[in-house]
Amino acid sequence: MEIRQLRYFASIVEHGSIGKAALELGMVTSALSQQITRLENELATRLLQRTSTGVIPTDAGIAFLKQAQLALRHLDDAALAARQARLSGHVSVGLASSTAGVMGLAFMSAMRERYPDVRLRMVESLSGHLGAMLGARQIDLAILFQEEPAQRWSVLPLLDERLFVIGARELPGMPTGRQARLGKLGELPLILPTRKHGLRSLLDAAFHHAGYSPRIVMEVDGLPMLMDAVRAGIGATIQPGAALARPENADLGSVPIVGSDATRPNLIVSVSDDELSPAGLAARVLLAEVARQQVGQGRWPGATLRSGPLHKN
Image (cartoon, rainbow, N blue to C red; front, side, top):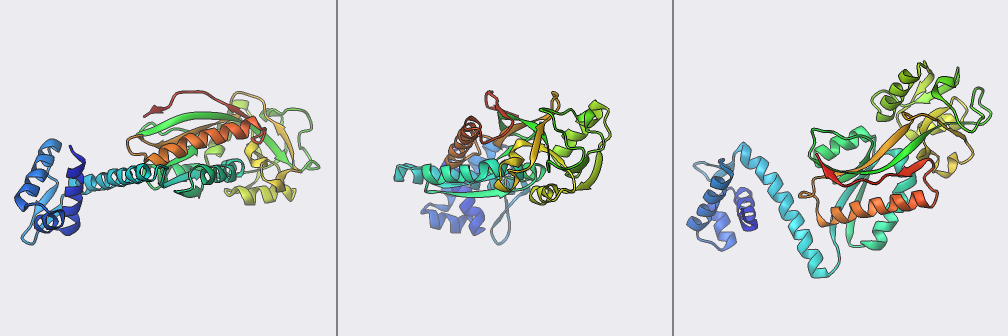
């Protein structure tokens, strides 16, 4: 398969006619038709359906067109970067709210400084939503907290986050020691995300393992609003240390939870390397670099870096 065949096919679909596409490409119609026939033979499937007024893509052709356009876009980005002797293009990156608090501004600043010609799009959402967006190719990469084995993703283990009990220091039942255990929180009122949230699934498994029935007084999915309730003294919460990164939460009490199931893994997950543009590849490397800096400079409470090779599902 050749790059020019992708351009030929995309042009034919755009014009709805082999003849019109040949005219635009400066080719003889028969030569263009032969190129598409070669492409279909190589793929062992029919990409175009001939009609009385021209051609339309088959179901296979529609699926192929989407990936062909993506490949051509990445090729154009790479060519532009080479011509300008610096990286350009665009990339979209997703972060969960807690991660955005400790990583968002630092990463955006680093991208702006190192790759000023790359157009960056940031998405802040629940990790489950980010995973769905990644699967739909609506974003290029994200920091997630679990893998999806069925997805053809590239995955880089990044770090582990210790979970903390976080709350107003004067809140009745708030732990006062240097560490806490889930089974020893007693009647401490808790504000937690709902069960559609990945952190809640992790906590429910940890509660079960500890034989503890938590006293949940409120469920809130949005981290800013959840932390508003915690600062108001309505209850405490259990969150990774990144939730403490924003200045308004600096006065809250926090006690690390001990136990092997009281940690949350962080993974840099992206579309497969053959789909990731040069800008995406650079952003992935820089995202890991910024994370290491944040941990090394003590700006990511409870985070421990992990080393591991990039792998693909």
